[in-house]
Image 1 (tube, protein in one colour):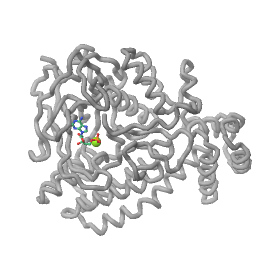
Image 2 (tube, helix red, strand yellow):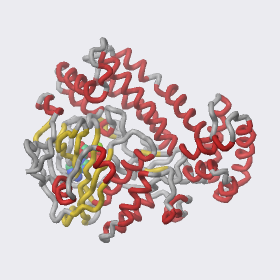
Image 3 (cartoon, protein in one colour):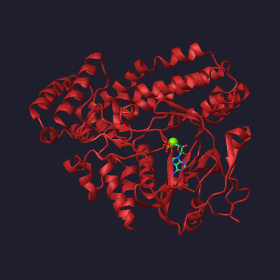
Image 4 (cartoon, protein in one colour):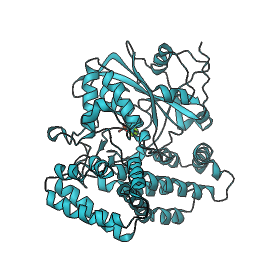
Length: 471
Ligand code: AMP
Ligand code: MG
């Protein structure tokens, strides 16, 4: 018996919210990467052998009673009442951090699916969680990954894997939709009080705490959207069941980082109408919050919630333009600066310029590099001249400005073609690139000399790799 002590605070909720499950282990599990620093940080101090067993649901732990959570959700705008953790298992909580595996077999909520996760999608989630954290964006985390000899059929036969992912909360907007569906306001109160204790403890004992909870969730999402848009991150499936109540990025599927800039870019192969396109993301976040407001109806003043959610876009713009101004080296972003930023988006799109590389080069004052990337360099040159005039008005020294810009403009983001390189290697049994990419993910502002090529614009033939949802 291991001396790991896991707790189950979620199970203090009524039974409708979860179901106890038995993990169905994979054959010949093999630990292919672990996030050592993070394991240390959360105090999960296990040998590699025991860590492998934990991920495969086979570690003997006292009182081990893993469970899957129930939730509903709006998928592509349509309500689906019975979702839930169809392949995620909550192993238990360590000092407030919920340990969760993805891919240990079917649960009560699997519907007709197999409860497994393929290696390719597990690698994407593992690396991307850490990449987002490395960029300073609120996200669930990833602690380790195993692969195995168990296979499943997707579009072809594929190897399966398990990621150990963690979060301070796995409650989703869809969990509230599920609670509302039970038509018992006390269940909604129970869930809201749980979320307050777990994620918004400053609201305990506050009058109107459910309204305040909703406002706090809106605030977190405004910041999250401003951050996503600023780094060019596209989630791909912003269904309400993939929206985290604590304002974290969750459920990494067909996501992408912007390459050659395109405002309307759609990264999800199944998203035919572009509901989750890059420029739609903040609007969808607001739509999702309005669904959440609806779910709160029986416990809070709906009008107040709606009017708060409807201020989302204006407040989002404030935060977003402030961050974008900082990426350009402005101490304060004025309304005129907003014009310059909007022009920049047009110019980047016309000139097909790589989004991340542009800002990185700008923070290195490598203007020639920018011109060389541009398909239509006269257009970007006009914008750059305006920008250089604007930057002259900055009061801070050039040196200080450059330092600040380097701290906000990453040299590396994990573009899909880079993840494909890792996946191809791993599918052939080579895990070195996986582990190196983890380092790049965790330190996107640093130097990774061996991988200089990944800091350049995406090679033309490798750009725009689009994933499907089946994983
Ligand atoms: P996702 O699109 O990954 O957020 O998943 C949507 C819903 O489908 C969630 O309830 C998942 O648990 C469930 N799901 C996705 N893939 C599988 C699978 N292979 N086995 C069981 N459930 C799944
Ligand atoms: Mg999901």
